[in-house]
Amino acid sequence: MAFTSLPITTADSALTGAQGVAAVQKAHDIPSAAVILDLVAQGVARKPQTPRTFSGFGNSITAAPAGFTQAYSRASKGHVMYLSNEGVGGDTTAQMLARIASIPAETKLATVMEATNDASTGVTVAVHTANMKLILETLISMGITPLLVLSPPKSDTSDTAAISAMNIEDWKTARELSILCFNPWDLYSDPYGFWTTGSAPDGTHPTDAVSTAVGEALWSAYDTSTTFFPLNRNNNFGLISNSLNMVDSNADNVPNGTSLVGGGSSAVSLGNTSLGIGNTFTFKVTNQLGYTDVTTSLVANSRYIFAVNMTVSHIVTGDGNCEMYIQAPSGFRHYVLDEGRSPLTAVFMSLEFKALETGTYLIRTTANGTSFEFNISTAQLTLFSLDTV
Image (cartoon, rainbow, N blue to C red; front, side, top):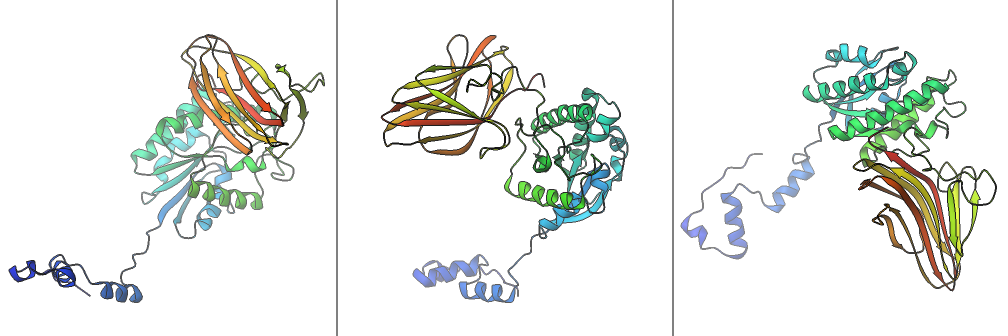
């Protein structure tokens, strides 16, 4: 059905109300509501969304016939159309860079993943980082939107440390290039960076069931823009001294490196908790002010990320608040939480900041309770240096 635009006549311009609307529709080629509804009923006015063509680019984990890339496409339910699997077993970033032209020109979206083989063949973190950045920049120049997928665990101590370092550098590159970065493998990684039991029988390659679940998780993360953030549960590279104050070596109920001041009491819960993998420190205050301190050394003009999971609760009705901040030697405070109120349930908070001066910084958590018991629980308390990792 076609519409022909007709000019507004002098008589038309004098019309008002429904007649005036009809005149404007006639002049500007706007169909009436009845016509639009009829078109919708016929399916004529519905323009289907064109799916984005998608290819996977990487090593043998990408190349697997039942790999995560195929599951990613299926989970999209038509939003992403699987085009090509450009995974090659044993490939390093240098080899991927050499064959990047093999990616079909029709590709609009491509997952990129590799650190496993770089780590196992002795490629340095610096060389890996340069190669990965060039891969991502080349894809962008080809008109392809890269989705950076961080590499999965490996049940090998030396390789795991190298992969962790490469993953952090790749994440920083993604931030620099403003592209999305995901780590869907986190569900199958234990607190030490190894595969969880049964996830990868050979210590490197995930089972088909794991790959399928990871592909579905990747689509969910992409669809909701849930990108990677470095926590101690999924990457322990780059942790600053005393940043993870969740170990109680002398069993005094206060984590190592932490001082308990004021009228507070404390307890340490070890192992997996409702706040996530890792230890939880619960700080209790009744009818008074109390706080915990942990110190660390930072360097002026360097950038850092502080991250924490926190819950706040109270037992008896009353008034109170809690704060968490990072205090510079001069007394300047970077607030993570200012006058937090109960209840807060498993709230993840992060703060990226630049150190204004070199010296000893104080990470302080305070609780000020009146006529009730005030509980603060923290987990995954993590401080990363963006300049040195």
